Figure 1 (spheres, rainbow, N blue to C red):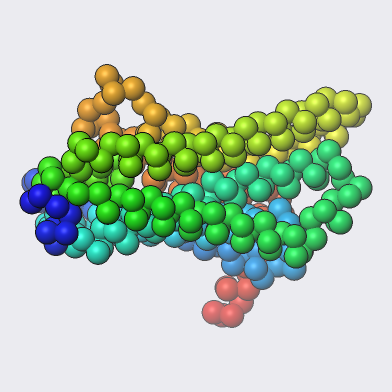
Figure 2 (cartoon, rainbow, N blue to C red):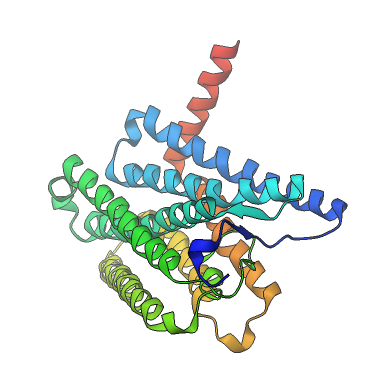
Amino acid sequence: MSNSSFLTEFLLLTFADKRELQLLHFSLFLGVCLAALPGNVLIITAVACDHRLHTPMYFFLLNLSILDFGSISTTVPRSMASSLWNTRAISFSGCATQVFLFLFFISSEYHLLTVMAYDRYIAICRPLHYGTLMGSRTCVKMAAAAWGSGFLNAVLHTGNTFSIPLCQGNVVEQFFCEIPQLLRLSCSDSYFRKAGVTVVSFCVACGCFVFIVLSYVQIFRVVLRIPSEQGWHKAFSMCLQHLTVVSLFVITAVFAYLKPPCISSPALELVVAVLYSLVPPTVNPVIYSMRNKEIKEALMKLVQRIVFYQS
């Protein structure tokens, strides 16, 4: 196969060859789905149905849950189907679609986390101007910008990846179509094209990270000036969930894409891919609901409504 135009399908990595282990993989990923998908759906429904949660912070949380739902739905069901039916093949168009959707959801989530950092900055550092600066139209525009930038990033990377000639076969050493693994199938003369797109995305990602860090530097400076301990607790509780989600997202993504080649191995890359693609969407609903009184109350009301209508 001298060019990607001759490829009709790719072969994904399987977790095991034995039928028992394949069923175990299917069961484990099913457990992940049952933990992540209902959790995000509950948060989406609770925020949408409870008028008390119609605030900028929960509007962005609703968008975050939608993105988490989309990202995990892009990779896990396909991998489960591969184990259940014992097949490795994924069509060329299916692989390109998976790459685009996963990048779209992941990139949009990172940009949305940047927007949420700005929201926390305004709420704590400029509380008197919060209603003016974070109006409903502004919030919608900021969320749309996060989704739009994720879309552009996905188009750029997907188009660049699948326009490069693939000369090294069609075996993708990952359980889903991941760009670093696909680029290993490309010809050596496409190095500069790959590097150019990577540098652009890296600069944008660094810019968002610097913005988040600077926002929290300003937030902590203001919080440390608060005289009362109760004020400290309220301010930190507003930021703790977001800071935890950002840390989890950045740490797993950085380790996945910037780890030294000397420690790279197929087993490690598989573990890292599972961490950065499955852990954040699964854990985020728990992080935001566990220490959030408003979310807990909204979920309790939602459950009571469901029980009432069923009875």
